Length: 365
Image (tube, rainbow, N blue to C red; front, top):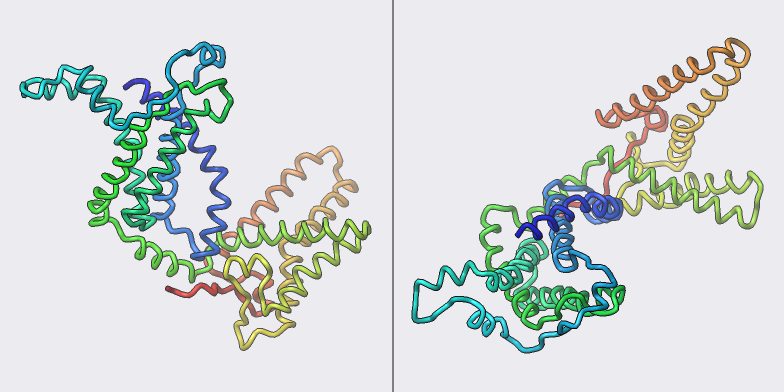
């Protein structure tokens, strides 16, 4: 039991790194499909990842040395179905005629393996029915495939890293794991009584998706920046001058939004668009908005730094570090003010000048 607890601890410590790698793709997908990130869905998905990680570690850990595995002479496979029943009868104190041996046999190590294999895929069945809305047939199929993946991992010696399998490929594990998934499918009905259904979660997500949150704007602007940088790199292949940079910015932030009625590529992906506060959106409003957006977010901080460095060389060179710290505070509070205005749903300068704002094109389903 202590060995299992150590493996679970390892899974918990490893989980933040796996979650970090998964987070950005997850955010992009959620904003693309639902327009929001609903907290309950986050809890369900990340707990599902933690479960799969823990189950996988329980299958492969602890890892032996390659030399130790090379010297193994134990069987690699067990292909007799329901062999665990015969092992139970042979290796425990169970006597069918003596009721007093039942509980004692239940507590003996031979039973641990059976219950471990049942429990290993039981949560999988719960997730498949509750969140992924799988039928019983699909639950059986996918649980069997998960179990087969685990067994092949063991049979191949962790995908041929080891010279042979260091754990037994057991057909009984396939049976017990799949049965555990079926039990999880049945138990899921209990969770479905007090947890909101998947449809309710989707409805709530779509409802939240109609709002333009700060995080959604930030992610969309970040993706736009990455795509624009790719434009710059591609055009630089054909033209190495500064013209390629300006052309990329003009094409991406001005021409594309005008041609798509207020949508950059990232805005289209995240179901966002620019709208007018007065009447129908005009092309010149988009141009004004994009121009002053670049000025407010990029040009003004850059020019501030340029003039700061210029004047500091004329004044107090020996206080360069102090003035640089002061300028850092200025930039911090400048962008903090922008963030606060967005969080408070107040228009920024470029939105006031262009009389535009960002709306979500997500429709409640």
